[in-house]
Length: 454
Image (cartoon, rainbow, N blue to C red; front, side, top):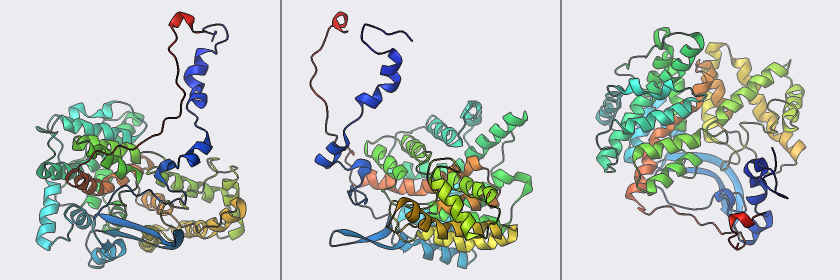
């Protein structure tokens, strides 16, 4: 491309590469001005920006101002997630609706309240009349998450009072999305598949009386059906993904938009956009792909040496996606254990046995065991490295026959109840718009007329 003037770089340099020069702030200035990059303190812990009664993510202690590793724990409204899962499944019951009720109301439901809550969600599974005619599946997209965002914003147009932020309306919107998102995601997936195979889209009907886990499997499987054990396994995943504190990226995004007083549809669409990112919700698919690549690359899955050699190549950017990352290892808060991963392993073993996938589960556990030591040897890392639930999510979803493009949408469907709780806590609690500060790093410039610029 020709230059635009004597001594000036090509337009492409200014437009496409210029930001590397213009937008780069010297690293030492972040230290000088004590900037909390990524809202992280110098020791890696999160900057305290709010208070919540919804959940707590515990992964370390602070002793004399220093971070001390500790076993992980996740609590919803004061209840340990391990106790919630064991309580429901120990009684042979699905639990996602129970934790959703708990997150939204702050209390465990009675049997009658739980029935009413499920019926309220079930009554909202049908999409508004005329909605499918405008549904954004007709627009090509490589991401179901992107379709889910646009589908959510489209629902704004079918709400007679979409900007109402009263508690009654907020709960109704939250329950309607809990009811509708599984079907919306399924329609988007099936539309993509139909386009590939040049077939008509089959819109699955909404079944009455199904739980969230059963609904997700039903809209995906249709006439193929599903077993109760499969639905119970998915229910565990939904319970574990329902909430993870206000400090995670998507929940904080929801709270930031909610603090402005914007409508619920905009806030939840923004949270979906955040969760879509590969550093957040998209990591579950990456971890699953890495395990599949490991299985294909290692001839003897029971060999510690072969698996360790593969992980070494991953860290040296010689294997898998050449990113140098072992997906599923390490977490921003958990140091010793991720309680969600500990819970999943116990339930996944039973399903793996039924599906003939125990050897694959053994391989994942071998990666989990060997990975931290390989990271210490290759990178010199000394801090504890916990296994993230992402290490197991992709494997569980694959056993359930869930397509990869729906891994993150299912994560979002589960997290909806947590986002709703945090949105309402922000709307009716602090009631102050979130506005962080940025120091300006630039010099004063005198305006130059256009014919004098060279």
